[in-house]
Image: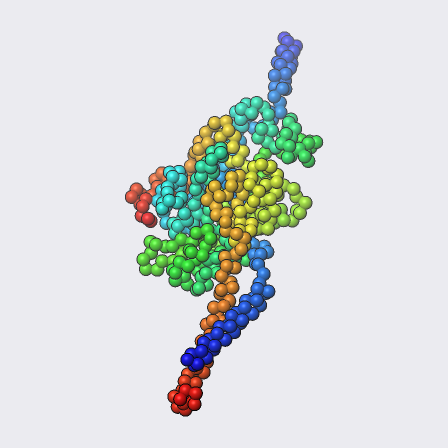
Length: 310
Length: 174
């Protein structure tokens, strides 16, 4: 009985010291922690939804630039706007890194079109979640990924707050993740805008340095009183994204999640993740020690029985 | 005889001047303008400028920000430009760049910190916003091909016409 209590005490002590260590550890991390503002000269795109006419030219340009498989329907077929799958409008897929959807907003004159694709976060959830480091945030602003190391675990699909990474379900042998790369390989790294931006007839998208686009976006809001919702979606959402949006209707009406908060996805798991290495390295040694100590007493008990037990 | 011809000629000239004068500023524009920045996908547009001058009732400022004959009317422009004189050029392409997102153009803007017009659409954006915006308002045709016919390369780009995906492929990815 006494031995059992002793063991309990040991365990309690162990837990207490473990908790203390973890608190100290995270405390240190928290003080060193600062939010990453993104690369200073990184590029971005400001998408003005009020200018989109739903012509799908951006989708065609993306398909050509990224050499994607043939679409299900021609890019001038507007019946795609009526497609509903699993109760949802069209999403990005292995065959389409960007899609345009149509929204009928009550009280708004005419339909509103929304183009979306990877938003290229400053601190991407996909990148944080990938255990093979397939993702890279480049100084130019793109979130690219390395298909060669992708093991197809699909964790990034869950980590992405925008549900952007798509799985290559068509490949039974080696399925990988497919998503918009901001045309990094073919354009962005040479200082050119993504193909969709260049192709858009309405110039819905403005390409430039992210910090310039934020200024420009606010000026556009101020310069056209009453036209826009006073918010740039992506300026602060999930720590800021390279692709940002202006809209004349509430963002929640056109498929945007307005409840994501301003914290990067990594911040929700940072504290937990800092404990993991400590648990993995300290705890095995610690508890092996406790175990041996406890067993030592038991061993002593069997070899030289003490008076009080007799 | 020759005197008669001269006076007749002068009278005719005076008549011509009289009839032309009221619409002189409108007539300075071209009869047609060829818009050919998208010729890789679409045929060049032969824009009937004269017809649109009639539609706009000779008011150039309906389409042009600043032009010969009419004062700046947009109140945002007038804040600075209400006393601005005529500009040397009124062609869209003389201000709106064909390559608004090229590294060179972005650098040009970055190098001019006092530049007010940083949110200037490129030529393609300016054309489409202005033309299509008005066409929709006026109930004029607003389909892409109502203004510019697609080329074969354009059909391939949009995967349309003879480049359309085969039927039955529609649900292949589901």
